[in-house]
Image 1 (tube, rainbow, N blue to C red):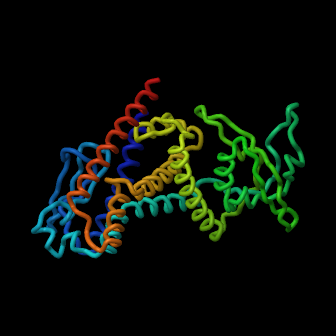
Image 2 (cartoon, rainbow, N blue to C red):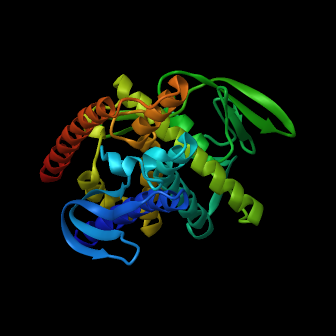
Image 3 (cartoon, rainbow, N blue to C red):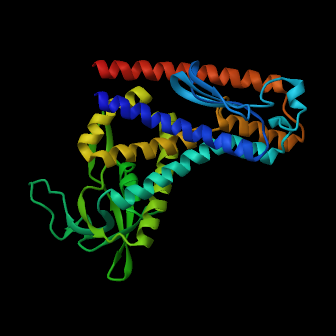
Length: 352
C-alpha cells in the first residue's frame, strides 16, 4: 500500500504543480507581479525567496496550491501599479486565469501520446470474432443481432465512432434502450436497427459493454498514433462532461464520487488489472478532469473567476470587488464542505 500512497502523493503533486505553473508562466509573460508560488496549503514546510522577489514554497497540506499575484487583494497601491493583475486587459487576465486548466488538459494529452506509443496494442472497431454466448451457452459465430464478422462500427445512434474509446463509452451509456448502429460492410454503410448492448454490473451500477466482440489490431504508424492520441483525449473529455451531467441527474450516487483518498485506494486494483500503464491512464483522466472541472463557472474555481471577467466585458466595468470576494468565499466554503464529505466517504469505504 505504501507504493500507492507515494505514487498518489507524487501524482497529485505533479498535477497541482503543472496547474499552478500555468498561472505562473502566463502571469509573468503578461507582466503581472508575483508574491509567491506555492504547492500545498497551510503552514510552510520549505520556503525560498529568489532574487526576483518571488517566494517559492512547499506547504503542509497537499490539497492544492496557489500563485499569489499583485492586485488580487484589495490593496489600492498595488491595484494602481503596472504589475497589478487588475490593471491588465480582460484578455490578459482571461489568459492568466485559464492557463492552469489548459496546462492540465495539455498534460493529459502528453500522457495520452506516450500511452498510445508504449501502452500496448491498438485496436480498431472492426469485428474479428464474437465474444458472447446465447441462452444455451453456445458462442455466436458469424452474426450477433445483425452484426457480422468483418463489420467496422462507425456510428452509434448519432455519435460518430473514431476510436475504440468512443465505442466503449457509448456502449456504457446504452443499458436498456436499443440503439441503431452504423457499420462499414463490403465498402458500404449498413444500419443495424435496435441493437441491444450486453450489460455488466459494477459497484451496483449497470453499464453496457463493448466486450461482446474481439476487435482487429491496428499498426502504430505516426498518423495512427496522432489520431489515437487526439481522438482518445476528446473521447475522455466528452466522457467527463457527460459523467458530470449524469451525476447531477442522479444516475450515480455519492458512492461513485471519490477524492484523492479514494483514488489512492483504487490504485492497487487498477494496477493489478492493467499494470503501470493503467495508473498513468488514471493520471491522464484525472489531469483532464482537473482541468475541465476548474473551468466550471462555479465560485472559487477558475471558471467562476472567468465568469466575472465575461460579465465585466458585457457591462464594460469591473464587478464590485467586495461582491466577487463574498461570492468566491461562499463557493470556497461549499467546496471545502464537499471535500470533507468525499474524504470521509473515501475513508469509510477503505475501512469497510
